[in-house]
Length: 67
Length: 258
Image (tube, rainbow over all chains, first blue to last red; front, side):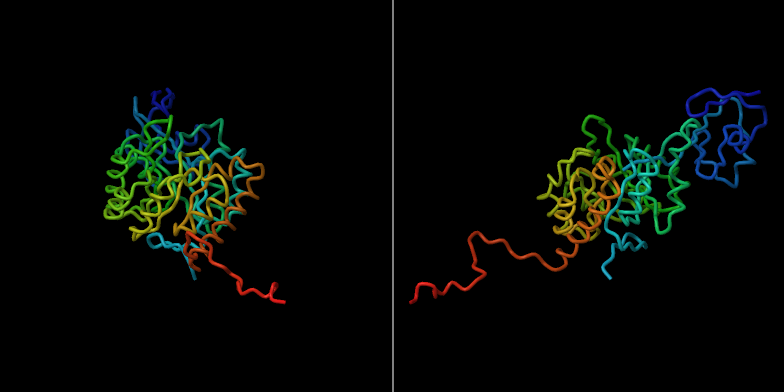
């Protein structure tokens, strides 16, 4: 197991998890979520190839109401 | 056809609607429909699996004729705003970005220096930059010169409902500007939106006034009608003001002539 920082909180993950695995674990279809790993944007077509590592800082962002 | 041109985009509606502060996503969507607005602002927020219904991308992108304009709210520096813009573009698929940098939550006044810097960088990268600014004609001109798609001076403080308190400055901005001037923030009533449009604004951006109204969809429609009426009046050409009365009826006496 590894531990990443997901939106500021500790999240355990099986080793060799990709970004797409993380999205599946938290129940997101990934369509409406922007993924940023260590300040780098991970595009949808790259999410199953991009592996997460111990201590990675992951931000998942969505569109919410705003003016 | 009188339309609003922003970059390569053409809009028939001159009302831009924000999506914050609505009681529910369903009410917001109904208000968007009723407003006829084609450009809709959204904000970036961290995903929270307990609040999945807050995700507006799905329902808004399913609506026909809607273009999303994400904002950079939450950024307090140019660098943060640029980063937010990059992330937002991934989601929205649109080049629009509302640059909104307000470091002080007490008054939410936009930081002109950071805003200018972010706008300069993002315009160069090909974004359609819509900067939220104080009603400053010099700043507005500088933003036009670095390639912004519009300038969006505030009518009054965000969410304050104090109307177009900056009207005199906005008139100067409009006179000097070669890009659309959009009053953003502070509007409370449709008559204020009509006033802004009569002055020659290209559009108005409204959020709180619709979101917290007793009946948001009905208020959205009222704003749409006011924006349309104000625009029509501007195009028709308002009469000049006069310091004294000028009669509209003949003043020749006839009642006392017999």
